[in-house]
Image (tube, rainbow, N blue to C red):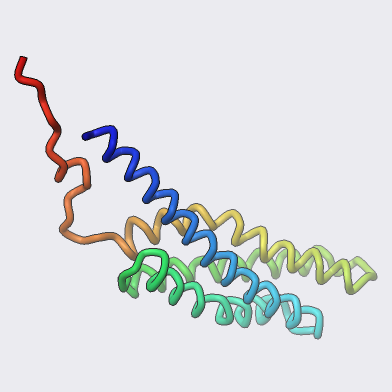
Length: 156
């Protein structure tokens, strides 16, 4: 029975990871397009980061709450995590924007600064999963599945 429980937990964790990944891809596409368009049309990197964050945070929360974890999460930890991520992205894109200013090609500047925005969220992807799973959408008061599942013992 214990092996079956571990296999089930592994499958359920993989499904959770897949749903989180899909939700993140959708939010990333929305925010990347918003960032690239804003930056391409001359918006400062820090403002483009803010617009992109606002564009992606809504679908990310809704998809994670309703589809990935299937329950409402704690809003304060969620807010701290996503605002912290936005601040990190704004700093990284602003620094990148400063570094690419000597380039003459606007296309290359846009590609590099937009890439730094994507790279920031790629690095934060796993960190955010763990924080969302353990803090934001954690089941409160529930014992781990292994603790609830009786383990069969032989009487020989």
